[in-house]
Image 1 (cartoon, rainbow, N blue to C red):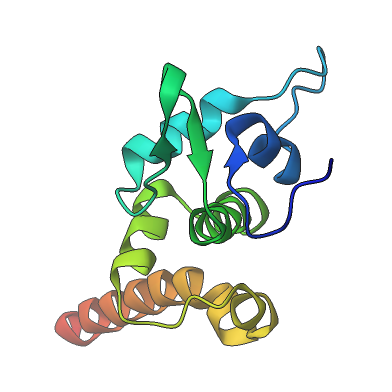
Image 2: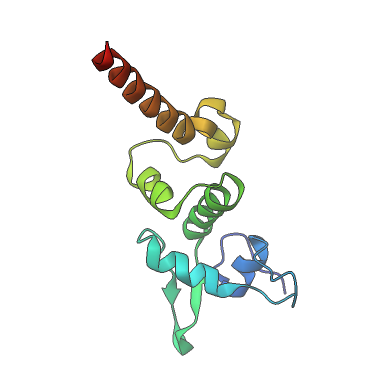
Length: 125
C-alpha cells in the first residue's frame, strides 16, 4: 500500500527525500532533521504514539527550503533564521531562480565593507 502525498511522513522518509544520507555508512542522517527542529521553531512535527515524529507537507516544504539554503547556497543557520523570520517570499523556486537573491547576502557584506572603506578614505583627506 502506497502513501498519498498528503499523508504524514516519518523522519526516515523525510531524510531520504532530502537525501540526508551518510556517504560512508549509507545510513539516514535523521539527527540533522532533529537538530534543525531545535534551531528553527517553525518546524513542528506531529508526535504520535511511540514518540515518533511525523511531518506534514508544510513541514517537509520548510525542511526542503532550509536544506537548500544551508547545503546548496552555503548560508549560515543565522542567515536562514533571519530569512525565515522576514516577510520575504519563501517560494523555493523564486529563491533558486532569482540571481539577486542568490548573492544577496554576500553582496550586502561586500557593499558594507566598501562603504566603510570609502568613509575611511574620505576621513584621511
